[in-house]
Length: 247
Image 1 (cartoon, rainbow, N blue to C red):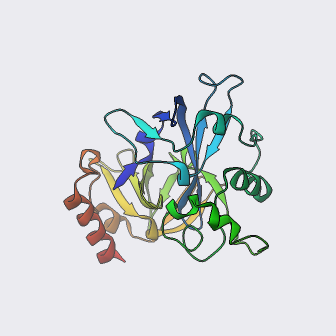
Image 2: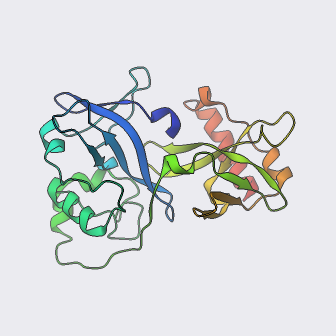
Image 3: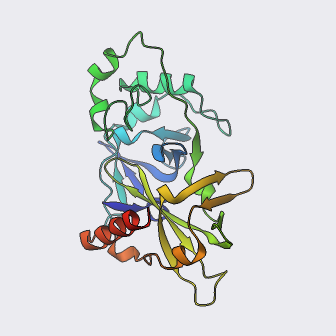
């Protein structure tokens, strides 16, 4: 199912034994377009609270009615996890310590989205880590804040068009599937339009700009964003069909 990342921000985080914080942000790999971590704010819930990284390996399916995300860990596990250095890039050394602490398999080993798998679930098995011991190969990665991209300008092939208004992610693979473009501040009678991530030609962090490999007319002809229909399989099928047609 598709999820709005903007909507998930602020959701409660329910560990196995207690509530522990709120979802503050997501870090995604801007090359594979997949969420690698949720940033959890535990300051008001844990003694000496801090921001902690939680892998999708540990996340359950979000509960929309309760506005909560299950976390398949207990509070002490999270509290005692390797401390995150605030305002510094996430290093591979830190990721190694974090995954070894939880006993998870390494997502960067293999050619799939998650190691050799299409979704994060299998990496919870400690055997996945044991099987990778002694291996030093690793893929390049580039972690970025999902909140940071919100508001970035959109440039079509022939003109500027709007800005990023939301990101839609699959809640099983945690891969980003679509960007939502808001054209209302650029075009009279503009709307919010769903654009597949495959249409992104370039993501420029210094320029705060997303270049889309589509003309203005092609983007305007896209499917309008209807957040209340994200759980509707017919709506998702329409998005997939439009993506294949425009590819």
